[in-house]
Image 1 (cartoon, rainbow, N blue to C red):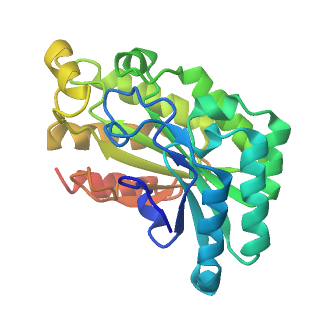
Image 2 (image 1 turned 90 degrees about the vertical axis):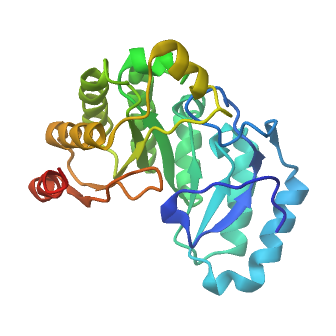
Length: 275
């Protein structure tokens, strides 16, 4: 397998085969993220991708899932991604599914029939960075998309049969917009109805645009108390039909998990116990 630069994947894809289909992120302007700042976005050649897939064939009995890297595989043109999924289906007929990072922007640029075709070819989950449901917060961190567009993208994925694992970031609204950040995020999530939800925590670094945002806009890395308060408010306001919530991310100070809404009170008790 050939990898270029640092390769990122969600914690839940630790056992997946990682196949780099793009280098970097097609947007790469969010001020809170430095994952792909050292990369110039481009699409890998089909020959390179196919060679990586063929190289993994001898180990296919040990491969449960395949994760397509880097930042947003759904940015690929539909025919290109279709060919990759068709080859995966041919070479790895017994895997559980294919997963990707995906921006809502890329989801909305795909036709519903294209997304449905991807799902039939094995694409079963997209990891979506909601980050915040507040349009003010989204604009401040240069997310490049609105709350309603996120909700629309979620509906398009759900209708296509592709599950969603959504991430939100504690502290992204700073102290002044903390409540708005969380209440608007809860509202967005209630409309998106993801199958999985992860809560991350804002971190600061001079190698990202976030350093300048903190200086100019007063945005600070949240205290452990603020993280707990935001997590509790979020969980309390969520009305999700069947969603697994976790804070199991390296950025987070506290680890809680449970299924919403069935275990909401249990999760709230875990949070209360951490105060």
